[in-house]
Image 1 (tube, one colour):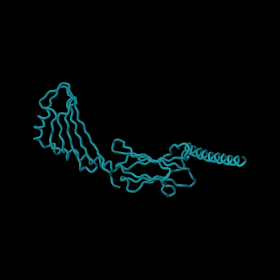
Image 2: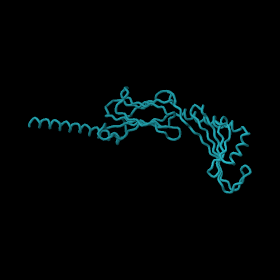
Image 3: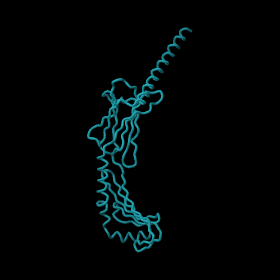
Image 4: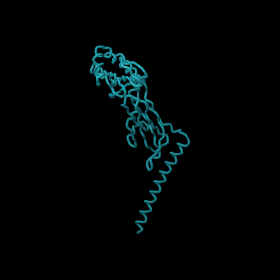
Length: 246
C-alpha cells in the first residue's frame, strides 16, 4: 500500500523573558524576545526546509530560510543583522544537523507503531437491524487504510457505514466502520484491517459471548423486530379480508 504525502511540521520554540539582558549589544528591560526554529517536511523528506525566526515584542525582524539560503531582514535592525549574519554559513548546515535526524526518528516511530483495532457493540438505529457492530482503528499513519467486514468468510458490502479518516492532530488518524445486522446462530462476523504498519491483514472476530446487558439488548431488539413484522402482516391480512367483504 503506497503512502500518501502529508505536510508535517516539527516545531521547537526557544523563548526567554528578559529582565536586563544583552542581545547583539542592545539592552532590553522587561521586553520579550524569542527564537522560533521550524523543520517542515513531508514523509519523503525531499522537501525539507529549515527556518529560524527572531521575534521581539511580537514583531519578526529577521529570518533564516534554508530554501532561500540566507537571512532576510524585515526591519532596519533585521536588515543590519542579516548583512552581518549572512557571512556565517553555519545555518546552512542546520537542516542536515538539526532537522533530518529528528525527522527520521519521528517518521520511523510513526511507521513502526501498529494500528490499534477495537470491535465493539454499537447502538442500533430505530427501525433498522437490531444489532450494530463498530470496528474502530486508532493511531495509524500513514492515512491510507482499508477496513472491511466479513460474514461467514464472505465480504459484506451492504448495511455498512464508514466514517472519514479523522486526523488526531499528532500525525495519527482514526476511522470507524458500522455494520448493521440481524444475528444468526453459529455465524462468524469479523472486521479485517489492512494498513502499512501491518505485515498482513488484521482480522478481529466478534465474540457473541458478550455481557448479559448487551446480549439482552440484541434479544429485545430482534424480538421487537419480529413482532413488528407479525403485526404488520396481520394488519395487511385483515385489511385485505375486509376489502373482499365489502
